[in-house]
Image 1 (cartoon, rainbow, N blue to C red):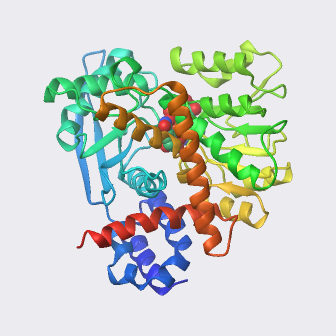
Image 2 (cartoon, helix red, strand yellow):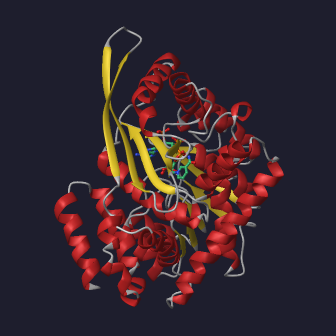
Image 3 (cartoon, rainbow, N blue to C red):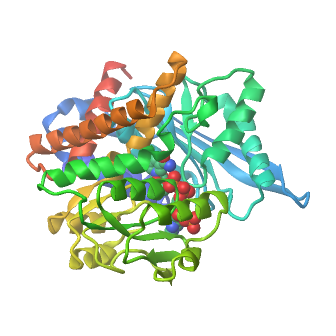
Length: 447
Ligand code: NDP
């Protein structure tokens, strides 16, 4: 390995070994930059890698709140403002008990390259809390969101940092946070994306990550002269990204045979069509139920408690859309054994490094999350543009722009991979294309 990259990785490992997923994402990115670093002495001279792996700023705060029993609760709040070389910090907010600084550093670090790939002017950031909205009343969620924003508001702004949703943060939570921000600063700012349609949101933003994932996969499959048409597709998760991945894949002629949540996976050999998906959306978004309930609605389907969807049934395309490290080497082997030819990541870093290597070694087309799921943040960028112009584009207009952006991301990742001699290596291509723009901007702006 290039000596400069090795030195930086050793330092990150030494200082942050306890932040395992952060170290994993830094390792994945830096090792794939080997050729571009070796060919350009300016990056080492300006110590770009050392500067890239340290957030420009990380804020940790307490969020005290009162539950429905009148008891005082307290959670951690975080915002990691990672890199602002090409625009204001931009990245979602995650509410999940597993959230800690290391998880948000991993997500913020990935976001730098993803946002750069979209071609829009957005820096990288991420935030969240270890608060678990699951099982909480609507009033408790509202109280928590308001108290979270009571501190966060002073660190964000339309030209400073613009958060959005992520795991555990959807339209409801964005609404409560936006309402509180507006009350405190007395200004209707474009400070969050994923807003409701009648108060500044963009058409297609809810669908954008999943649709973008399917659009990216379409481009990637086309390089092998194939498409979703008639193919069986395994999807994991049943939240925002999974739902709209399933919707678009189905519209494009694919047959989705699995979905999941943290309690297990469903297999539906007949395919999850539009009507069945509508049931799942109502179940997860309105009733806030569990995926296991799907078998009550569709008796021929199976629920396998505690299982991940990989290898439960044949599928030639896999689209992990739940969470990080949900697809390991064993899962990758099962997928390949059962005929998988392509993987497109809707979630952030759902495949472990070993699984990714296995796909590569077995000639499976592999789209890393930072390219395949960039449609969400890209459409957030479009929401910011519409807010700045004080107008709204039609559904067709936003969808066409999203499609165009995903096509461009695919092309720039492929071009960079081809330039360095490995046209099918989307991990290397996406990382190099995202990195160059940010690194050059950092050099332009001085130390
Ligand atoms: P949601 O909260 O809407 O859905 C998350 C889904 O993943 C749920 O089905 C959840 O199950 C499941 N899940 C969460 N944690 C685990 C776990 N530890 N094990 C198994 N299943 C789990 O989140 P999103 O759909 O928004 O996000 C999914 C992924 O996509 C994340 O990696 C996120 O970072 C990424 N992403 C999201 C974007 C967006 O626009 N929303 C943009 C780009 C990336 P359960 O209901 O049981 O918790």
